Image (cartoon, rainbow, N blue to C red; front, side):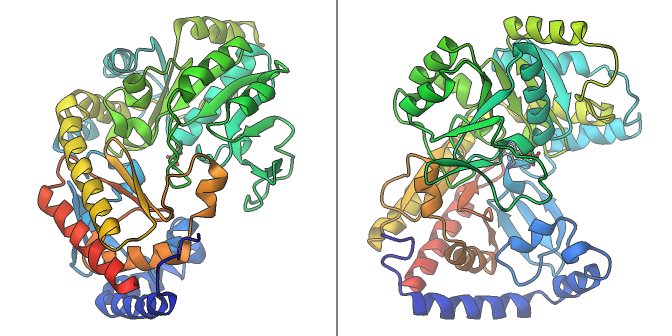
Length: 452
Ligand code: PMP
């Protein structure tokens, strides 16, 4: 079995060519802006990976609202990418827009807490069941700071991650299993010291490997998404987390759950919904409604160790910080978003719609007899090019096919439907409608038909 099993690859390549031509013809304004951008930006884009989408040149956004956005050429799109989770609750949710408009006349950043800070931390504690919180500007930073705190608190140097994980631009986690051997990810730029010395990597859903890796007692923490979402999607097998938590605890390691994507599972994330008791927890991206910020929380027991580590260290730079973290503007956005947007009612609506979407995609796949599957984590749906969902990073990696993804993504984009690049993720938000979902499913069906 390969991702292309059951497809007519010659037809697929012809479709790719015609969709690229159609994109170029449809988007003269984006084309002009892309050309202009080439004069003063590396690779002609503000972030190099913006060139890795399916499009021949970057699509320029003019305006985004709710589940929709308009491009520079005036085409309207329904957005199932939603900023790869950053806009999980829709673009510019009114409550966040109003709160940030209000705050924008009252200052942005002062190196001091604003009046929103205490209520935000209290709401995080209530929602996630962890009493102590700190703030950062991105989930990458939050993860980095948590690793630093936990290494300091435990006096252990190593961390453990799962093969195929992604937790942002955190140096420590870019270690993969290659033929069973921990290997530094070769795509990393400018990495001048070895990451495999302090990072242990095992396959997800492999309890024996976890047990063996923690047995030496030198691992400060396991950093994990409760469901792997960055290599396609890999669900935990039944009972996995229960047993894994027991192993982690028995070896004196701590469990850090990164809910940045799996916050799609409910107001308190996947861990709360599934009874995983993390020692520390990270949420980034959507927590401020798309305004850059992130949060991390911890248990009372861990907070004691963390505060002790700081108190007993010499005064000076801690390596945990950044000047604009917890700024007034982001804090206002988080307060509005947590109190008024990320509500149980919003989640209930998103879950129902995501179920409809997953069913629709499954229907298309079944109708055409394709060996593909659909996996769902709350509001997040992923279709994958294999008949049975993968159980670990190695299996998930083997069924990624960026060429095939590009064809499907560009086909949908040319029909006003945006899905997440680099795998096949579709997110619904409180402004997505049943009609949007039906249009997506119909276009997906037509695309599949054209690939056979
Ligand atoms: N954690 C997870 C699970 C992520 O998927 C990502 C980004 N995709 C991050 C952390 C990092 O987020 P950011 O790029 O906003 O720092």
